[in-house]
Length: 190
View (cartoon, one colour):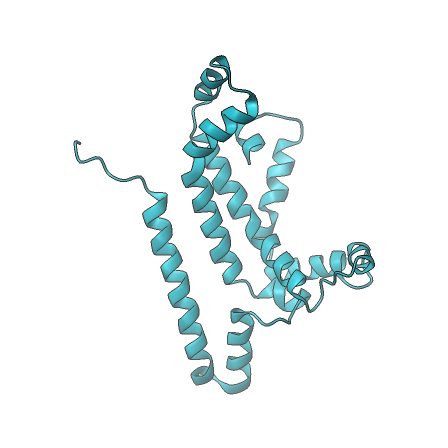
């Protein structure tokens, strides 16, 4: 995110497009793509199996699917947070004796934290609601959206309602938190 905010490089638009791709494709298609990459017979799936890691019907697969569809929100939020920091502040830190890592850690990161946190909360909320990619790649362990679907398909609205309400309350809490953290406090002097 920092490099996307601060640097121009060959292929930058392609990288940004690839980062945003999971936001625009149907998530069931994302699940199929992940299955083609991480399935038991797929190259990354075989590599994972060699070290005892399975992506199908496992927590690792659930996490991979959630990350794939939601990571663009973190990257984009962090990129905007870094863009909001004046590069001149980093240059001043360097002239005062800070090395590039210190300038980043002590100047840039503290000033960009709202964008990073906002992106992280959006990523978490998007991951919480993921259904399509998880249902294709890693149906088990069961996550709340899959449980809502199963209860609705198997037993109807009355069975799905309590789980859906819990999911809605959790999402509402996150977005209220996001709105309160993502916005700077108003200045009483103005």
